[in-house]
Length: 153
Image 1 (cartoon, rainbow, N blue to C red):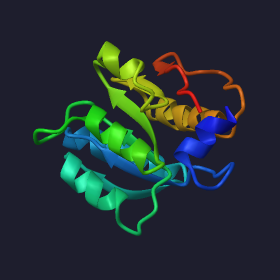
Image 2: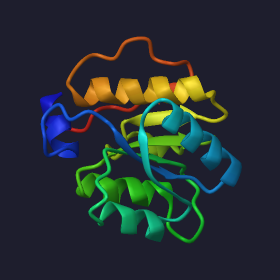
Image 3: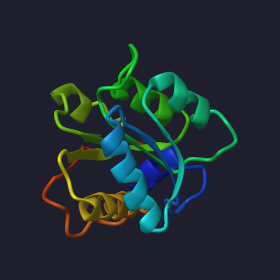
């Protein structure tokens, strides 16, 4: 699992602190942002399209995790965003109602949290992502979270 950490982060065992939310439903985006802030995470930005997410990812903001819906505003999808984020060394967790099968096997995201979910499930899912990125076996996986096969190092 150490290879996974190296693929997503430049520092070994970096803790998730700064999160980018990419969500096309305003109420869901607001709820996620509020839950993350209440849990002590810094929400770097909340956007609804690939181009805006790219601007944040390539800026000096610093993002540890992207929480992305599959459907976004505009022509590019959350899957394309996940590929791009991985190239930049940023981990992705999908948060979507319907995750296409091909997204599960592409090695571009850690997993998917199925909508609808409770705020506590989102916070627990981020904790699972931290465990994975630190090379630890995840514990107590929330029922709405599905982990994807880990990409090869």
